Image (cartoon, rainbow, N blue to C red; front, side, top):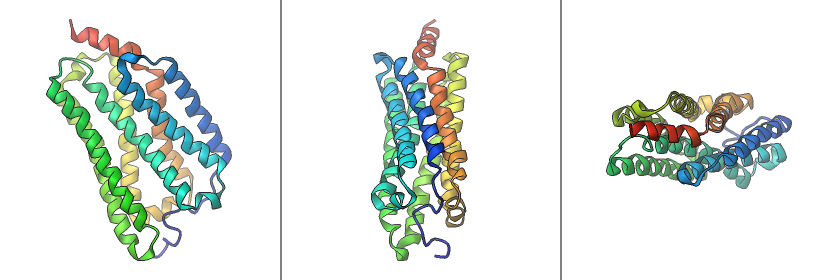
Length: 248
């Protein structure tokens, strides 16, 4: 395929200084997140801790590895997995939060939590053969088909969040801070999902693989905004207030 001679690797030279600085920002956010952690909301804490860690490690690798080192199957697979996990765990955290407020029936709560996990796992499973097929020029088209399917599933998961949140009506019991946090986090995840769907199309993949700023603007920045929002508007206090409000 024309223009895909380097697929699946990017053709740009990573800005190691920028990656190092941004890794520091995520590291500070991680420290702030853990400093406010409480055992009461263990699953939420674990999900967003994993997200912080995976994005931090990806940026460290981006800063430490040279362009030639990044163009190996091991390093490419590692960084791709780290980014995918970092985004998906934020999405799962959004779903987890909305069932912690108000009187949600246990069966509905389990569906809202388990359903997105299974969907996220399916999207991740599709990326395994997509990655394997990407190294053979004759199977690159099939690789893109699987990549598009995986991206579409994640996009659907981010869109589905809003009708589910509205349907279970827990937004009525949330404080303003919680609503703002969820809106920022969910919109950030949605923007990344749209970007990944677009870049799963060969022509757009070629364009974005030439310049690193596409990654920083449309993939890293929304994820960083979501993580910083969770840290700055930590649910430790607001979630307790939401629960107290729902009991009135």
